[in-house]
Length: 403
Image (cartoon, rainbow, N blue to C red):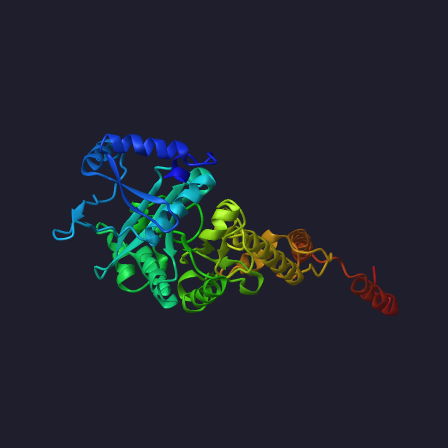
């Protein structure tokens, strides 16, 4: 309460005084005192009713009433089940809020996510902090009371929930889902987008595992199991592209972004420090850096554009190498002339496929001129034959009979 309501205060006196005042008005009560002497306060029935009037009209859901029940024999207060796990959840929310990640009313707990088989996976904590670059994130708080493989199962369930479609999904989306190709369905058509806002990044809703009250060795072992056994759900894929060798970017569109940290790190360094490690990465980063995908969609677009330009350049160079050359003038064909001489069904109209348009026009003109000359010569009368005309005179002189 102190860290959630007054994160800038160095002590909890103001919060404690306000709780005491609420206690005087029978709105809150002390349920138990923990081993570290911190008191756990809960709403009374009257306080629960007042809180519902205040918060529910604003769309803020409040938890169920924790009723006071006493043992009929001993008179001991029963149902004091507010355990260390719940305290760790509240402390995690407080540390996030103290770092400016999430408004104090932007945290909700025990949010149900119903799967197709009817099982309900409840998130320990959900934070919505768009101003901090985290529109939504689910958190699982683990005090190492669960087996590591149980956490893998939780991860799988969140991934499966991210694949679900709403009941009123269009027919084509239902057809794709029934054939096991949910990857082809846009996220805006899936159920999770009816519940949460867009994440601003590729993939499904981010999931954080926060470990509390445990050792570094246990955390390391658990994270190793999550990375190995849960790879199917958090790991990106290779892009299916024509330029496979040129694309090193990863496809995160169907992955659950998973980050891990410890409550001790959040308390010591702050939730806005480099205390978050993304599964698949070695170093710890700030939360937004850990959730970002520098090797994802943005890199893919750049690499694809570069590879496409290189391919276009190679194809253009190859095309230029195949471009025909005029046999008369040695000039390369224009694109239009090349198309004229190679288009099936029209090439005969273009004439010789070995000459450019100008040279072919000159060639046609020369042919026509030569043909014209030939026609003129064929139509002209024959010229007199001088040798034939002189023959009779010679005979005349010989016989002296020419008059």
